[in-house]
Length: 233
Image (cartoon, rainbow, N blue to C red; front, side):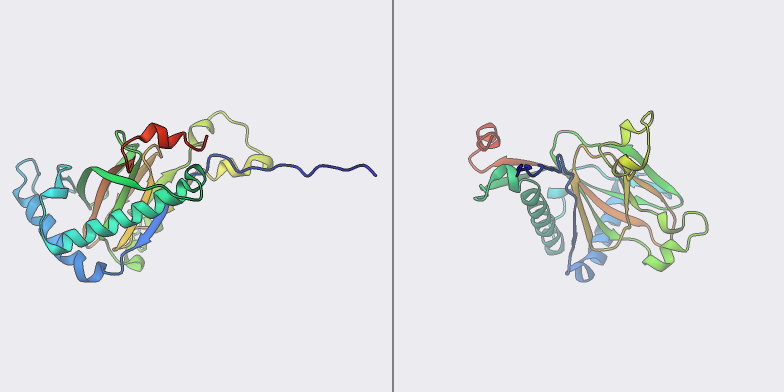
């Protein structure tokens, strides 16, 4: 009797995206939105009445109230869980200690059909978006033009750039699911690799869409990133 070896099937190069919900959002978001609106009003570069506003990326240390510190702790915890999951194989069963460094943290406010076109982030390994305020889901999706896509964050898979001239058939259906929309919801944190192309689709609503965006670099606890990175190779 001939023995037929079992095949080896591998899912290589996964893209990990973390979606986390802040249970304390109802108690904190409203205060944080008020503070951010004050900062916008004081920003000499802000255009009054503009449909889109982006703050400087130095908000981490500019806001010093308990609600802000609670949000930062939640963001750090969400990023840590996502990074740990993404590196669970590379780091091995005994996950090493690591440190997060926030390389920039800023606010964006949009309305009136404003959007943020496709882009990636540099100088970091992870990025994220936390939603502070947006119209409730049913109201947001009722927009007569944008519908369910009103203000969503769209993530573009790593194969997207290859699909322009690629042959498409039933066998590579997995390549054709090339983007994913994540609906905005107050209290929701989305963490994704910084190289992942993404955009904010046009938004219009009764309330401004208010988000916090940030970049994060991750470092081995002892600072020896290269040694740790290749320890399991």
